[in-house]
Amino acid sequence: MSEFEQAVNFWPLAAIFGLFWGSFLNVLALRWGSKYRGLTLAERSHCPKCQKILNWHELLPLISLILLHGRCRGCRKKIDLRYPGVEILTAVFLGGIVFKYGLSAQALTLSVAGSLLLIAALVDFETQILPDSLVASAFVLTLLVTLLLGQSALVNLAFPVSSWWRGALTGGLIIGAIFLLTRGKGIGFGDVKLATVLGSVVGMSGALLMLWSAFILGSLVGGTLLLRRRATLKTALPFGPFLFAGWLIALFWGRDIIAWYTQL
Image 1 (spheres, rainbow, N blue to C red):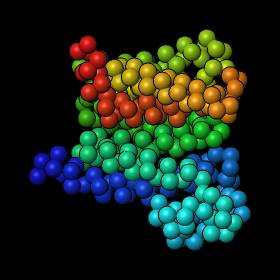
Image 2: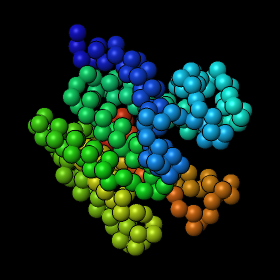
Image 3: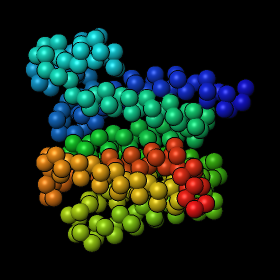
């Protein structure tokens, strides 16, 4: 059986696993962030609004949301859409990784590193702080595997500018320049480190696409919030989630987008 055939057979299983894995990652992010800071994984989950302890059948990814009609069984208040959103995102991410990169060390590394960085992005979304330990762990993991595999970058999107260090420099220097120009007010130093790590995975071309996508997505979300008067020009938006989203675009569609662009 070819690698592609294996991927076709196993990506649905990876996606189903991703629903449960995404639920776990969301718990980690919430307990890392400010809302549930101090809670350990041994402590049972509860409704953040009425504090009702949740039973196992209320924690099934997506299924519980549907059975409960999107409301807490105790207080009947709506369940935050963040929960199914993270579960679906993780399912799509893991399923897409296996489908695109097969059953390989590369796919496993991207899955683990992506999980660490997803937690970091979720924490940044809530607290506007990117945990150094998560970002550094993802960097060490991806760099070690890249060197062990003898590749210029973990994901080669374009030749010959796909080396990991070119991608790291591209991501770090561009975001770092914005950090310096705005004196840390327009963007945080954590974003500089995150862009460096993400860029090292996808190389120089991928890093440029990632940044372009992140800026576009950030502008669209910021503009929408302004139009709906849910934010002002002084409202701070965490940039980590947009960098992560841009990285996903580079991972899944980077080669096609770069090929299309170079042909123009």
